[in-house]
Image 1: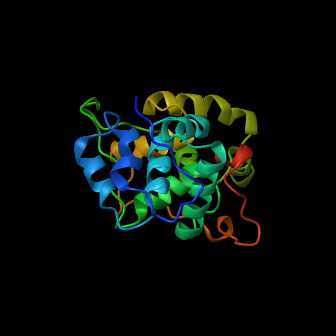
Image 2: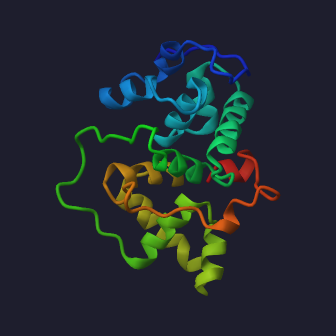
Length: 206
């Protein structure tokens, strides 16, 4: 797979087609076309976020982009500041899809014929991904035993056919579980600008 060497600069000066080259063959053609002309976020930010949305790790995304892990983290942190997503990667992805100018993810023809059914707890875990709430905090807010959410989380990712929480958020949009008319917004206390974590370490892994 081709890679494109990028500098730590994320000011949008890179050629869009070169930066998005790593996405060829990994997305529906219509989604890739829409990402080329997306008016928000710069090409590196869009490419990094999209690679992570389809299940690549941050380091894997950096390799495909021909840059460093720092470059990807820097790009996602700038995207987080623009979208005010609260500092966790799944929530950043969700904030991008909620934005009317950002392309929605498109399935590639392997989706189930019947709508995917989630139970109440699975939906709560999915919404926690999307709003930047940790499973521990979700359990505390609902007075659920924290260890009970571990198998729920595993089962949810299995239902969504997702590798991790960020991929799960993308899958929720692909499957129509979330739409711009019906999706959670980040609660006020998850976007406190004075305490927002950066997208590195445990925060960036979702």
